Image (cartoon, rainbow, N blue to C red; front, side, top):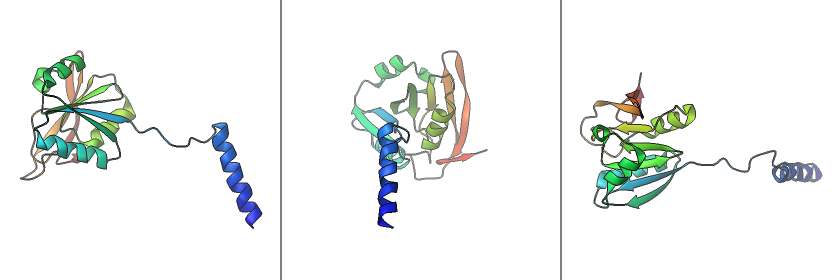
Length: 154
């Protein structure tokens, strides 16, 4: 019995060594640019971390320069800007929408939740209201997903 268990462990180690079984899936890192004085941004960071993303926070007072570099339309600006896997994430975008973006990989610049909708991740408290997550491209924008709080609705 012990010999079989040893051979099984040995076989698994051989598969890892040969690269046939991935040791661990890569977790995309979310780089968050936020104002040092913004509290709701910290709530959004906690939401994204709780969803399994690795998060790095960079505090800055010049978010407009970052938005300009990432080509976030001024009408979609919110209180923080993030980057993940080549996409911009503007504002209180729920982690579920980010996961769907990374799964579907549309040709786009990123996602945004303009303003600070009540009930969105980081803006909990009060009565949640429906809001859209917007997909934006170089040529325009369109609704991507609809949420109430951090729950998607069809």
